[in-house]
Image 1: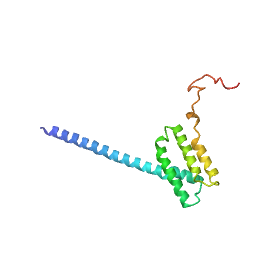
Image 2: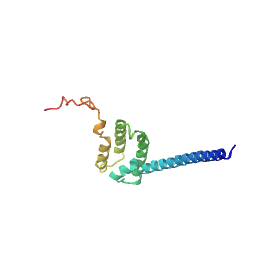
Image 3: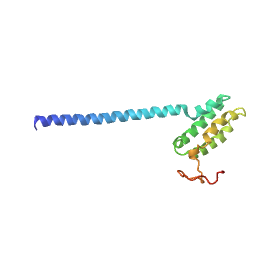
Image 4: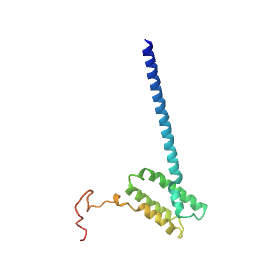
Length: 143
């Protein structure tokens, strides 16, 4: 083997090792950032939203609310972005269970949170009278 071919082999080998090490390093950083991001989201969680609206009356109620929120958080996580209708059903079920834990003074305080979380945005509602992208005026509208 000539000297020039040996030096080319060394350069190509060094380049390949650098690419592999760089890819592994990027992968490790990416996974660490994802884990940190997931942990930050989890720290806030559903209970922190509930806690902004009501103050638990005692530690037993706080523990029961936290357990309820954690149980629903695990069920809701996969559905938060893509399945709004399913999320609304889950939040309604959570509301029913939570009303059993709250005092009569706390129920009006938590109602705005559930109203906001169970109301579908206009884009997620199905309306059979109008088609998406249609330029026809709505025949049911009054003139």
